[in-house]
Length: 461
Image (cartoon, rainbow, N blue to C red; front, top):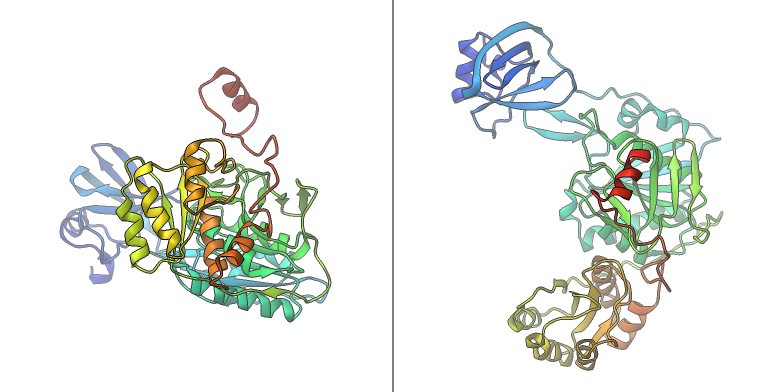
């Protein structure tokens, strides 16, 4: 055996492989104190510990097995895997819509590099065609990777670059835009693009995956199919997020870019429209509108791009016993805008009142949202709200906290005049502020109660 046979293994892991005379890519039965596991021994990253063997099960999932639990390893065969995505020329047709896919670093189609543990994206049209051949039946696809960052590293400069690039594609006559994006901050980017790209004549669809493409339960391919079909064939000319609707793979949902939020760390159905209903349902060859009112696709190439953002804006989540020095330090560090996610109808404690008043007098724009997420700010109801407004706090109606943060950064990026900022903030652009919430815009199912358990037995979650 040579070094390649033990790729990435060291210490205890290496000793176990040598003890039982097996190597990387061997198909094995591993007998442990917790039972027997069958699979293929995978290479390890050089940065991983030496206490586990990594096994790819027949189901496609990878597990780590503690070396201290291993009693015996039986060699069954040798199956060196080739995880390179086959690349094929993407077929084009003059009868199909032309779609542009911008990449920002999300792993919408990918393979796993077992040497480093990294997920390697498939991004060229040829790679995407090899990975998701159904795309060729939907559209002519071109791609451009603008960034290669995790979504937590997306920010104002990326928003601006992306907005400008989308604007250029629209002016050049593209039929639809898809943006591959990591899911963690996708709702921030969606709201930023809604404000920066206005009067767009074609769909702009953000899409990602909760589970990478090497996993059997991956949502990547179906999300991408739904997003491309929406961009190519939908008449909804808005910024939208396209992800799984239920946890199963029945359909996707199209969420308005300013009313959507990621609500679960791992569910495939993590994105929800809050305070409203989704725009539409999307299946492989069909789109069903859920809302009657939305911006319709046009045949022109006109679009307005407002690529502005003031970075000295913050989102402050209020909690009991918050101290005023937090707000003072924000102001002392040159911040021009503060969005507060307050309790209830939009409240904070009295000790921070003086700091809020000092901030407002120094020209800092201070807006109130609610940390309940659903519902409107109502600051006329109690003395607390009225007192805060007298000290300069402006209610942000029913904007989601993250959306208000993004919009305030966008507004302050255009003007120093706080009255102009207020006019921009409180003038709805696309659903970030609604006149009212529909009766079915607030639904949280509570498990355990009889009527809900009966519902769950009859309908999927």
